[in-house]
Structures are given as C-alpha cells and as structure tokens.
Image (cartoon, rainbow, N blue to C red):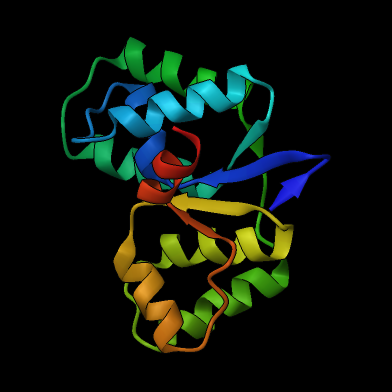
Length: 152
C-alpha cells in the first residue's frame, strides 16, 4: 500500500526496539532494507502509542541505560510518523481478541494499518495465520522475509 506514491509502513515494535537499545536477534537485514528504502525516499514509516507501550513493557523487565532510552524515544518521535487507531479499528481489534488471539497490541497495529491504509511490517507469522483462519484481510501485511526478498 502506498501514500503519495511512497510505501507507507506501520512498523511492528520489533523494528523499534533497536532504536532504544534493545537487541533483536536476526533483524539486521530488515533494518538495512528499511534504511535503504528511507534513504531512497520511497518509504515513510509510522508508529502508534501502542508500539511505545510495548517497548516500555519490555524495557521495564530489564535494565537499560536511561540516556539511551531517552535518545531512542526522541528519535522515534522525530523520525517516524505517529498514527492512531480509528474507533472502528479499536472495535475490530476487540472482536479479533475475542476470537482467541492473545496479543492485543498486535491486533491494534493490524487494525490501525487497515483503517489508515498502511502496510504493517511484522515477522509475526502466527498473527497472519490467525487472521487468515478467521477470514480477515492480510494483503496489508508485509512479512519481514517478503520485505527483504522484494526490496533488500
């Protein structure tokens, strides 16, 4: 999906964690591809307040340098575009949660991408399988391996 001829990508929190200093195994190729797309001017990246909530949840379980976290959060705010779910997005996330998918934040990211016309970048194949099993649209989802294969 695109906006103004650019790829408009809502990032799963996995891709934001390195910005605040949290290592994520096996993410280097994806981050390199995202940087390449941004530098070429063909992609715009988005995040939601739920990404930040998820990041803070992970940080709360460990000890990370406070200054690194502050710099990372500021970088996310300055370099990415903030978006929010619509009321319909919230309701759809709740509906999907009631069908058995446990990760409400992932569902909120998914429904936000749908209602805002964004592509959701994720490595969560379980989410995609759940959505397909329940007859939900998945054309708006770009799996990490597809990102790398197509644009890397």
